[in-house]
Image (tube, rainbow, N blue to C red):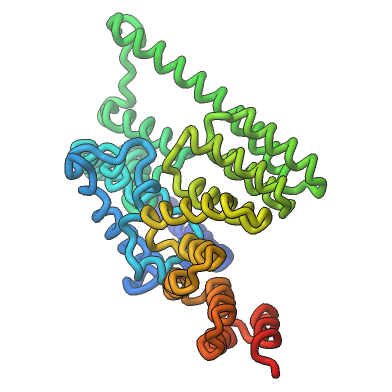
Length: 411
């Protein structure tokens, strides 16, 4: 009886500590506000996940084999723009380049097709059943392993695999499946009964692990160089650091994109030309990457505006027209397309693109500013004034709107 009382007290103390820790977690971190949105399926995190899964479901069968094979290793991000709908863009925007469906089964199906997705689903189902059964075991280690595996599987169904956690999941899953609950951890001989083919596989896995470690160290060095480039006040030093990052990971388009942004900060023709070179290098690795393509189209437009050369404008406009087919609902693409059309002397087509961009970005001011400019420069003062009134509702006393009002509407 005394021993039972001691155990009860310890359990009560542990429960109080966990309750306090959970309360602090909710109060002092963003977790609390995010948990509060889980009860509302019409808004917040739940609505976002449902919207994401709907877009992914439309993208899965859109392959030459109707989804039997997937979209390949570049996956969701290269087809997202073709399957997203207007309401998604209005609700969530396109500032962030979506590269996953926040569900590991959907992401796997998008990459490898229905067979890959079904295989992963069966694997997860088997692990889940094993973990649930092991929750009733007497040994604490069995319950701990089962809870860890279940928790990780569940988070992957609504979030995505984490590079820091995913390896631990499969280690724990392997221990959970091979462990003999009644007799402790089962430890088979490591090499005595291992076949020659398995030894080769183990050596291959070790080689891949070593290569991954080298790549990881290269990533760390490239990230440090990128941080120096971003924080540097000297444009020359920033460009040198950005190039160092690219040279350390020439296979990663991430550093090409960042290097282009660093070069563009100068706002000069030379800067945008250097940015274009970095983007072209990235596109040579991933020709259909949406982030690189959109950035390249914007850069070409900036070059055309600075050179005022008809051939540069023609190149920028052709690039934007092509990109608008792949990204028909991207506000930035449509806005830049409208600007290019206006520069090319087609105001009505420019107004169509800018009106569409403003509709997809209902809180954005920049598409409206450009729309007002086109209306004013084409002589339609009433429409221009109406657009300025919309800007006043979104951003009262906007300096660009006030400048346009003084330039075109003042007597």
